[in-house]
Figure (cartoon, rainbow, N blue to C red):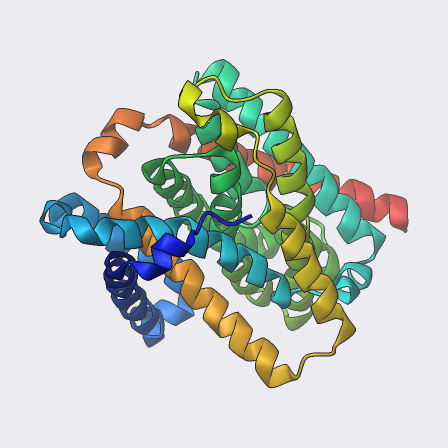
Length: 350
């Protein structure tokens, strides 16, 4: 189910590497708590991957070889564990509270963005399918968390995941400022509630949706968060469907020796759903759920740091600008196409 083996835990090498990654994650958490950083809505995940990439592009060659297994553990097993625990942020009640307009908008936008982004990336830009899927997932579902969830399913390389997260950072941050400006211009003709649906169903990160929604009103912010979290729930069916698709149509870019890996099933996606169901029952004390969520954020930050450490500017140059061009196209689609989808579903539900 997970990639860890008993040998991993019996080897001091992995402990040293994990502790090294944890040090970077701790620094990222501290930086994200700085007032001017937290106000901008920059999460420790984003800071973590930036710190990791800075290290990967400068001092990576000086890392003791014995520590590498710990970095790989953090970007693999720990990553899957973090995705599973992410389910404790959601409940089935959240799904019910968004109402039919929010659900319809989320499903349509996630499906159109992921499928369309994958097709554009592979057919027009001739990108590796796994990289196109990573970029499309980051735009369509929930930003960096979606990239981390999809990464083990498509068997992406660490630097490809880092680049996909980079596209989320760039275009999600830009959109966070543009959406409120468009609302105040009077061109949109949206109520605060409808604006919240538009924001929640199209913004890249949860933090982006919170900032853009609350920049208009508290009501818009509340709706945006709920609709956005519904999109996060859609990560589970996306991972399961993607796993089934890749088993049926394996990635030809993968080496033949990875046949067993290509046929693997994303069991962690099912565990993600189990965590949502457990959280929905309300059987865990609030303090325990809060502790799990804090631990999960730290695990996700560690995974981002580890992915960044395996990324260098040379690898980024090899990939080229295509992922950012694809993400730019998807950002425009989310803004324009998402607006009309929001108007359509709210009109039908009226």
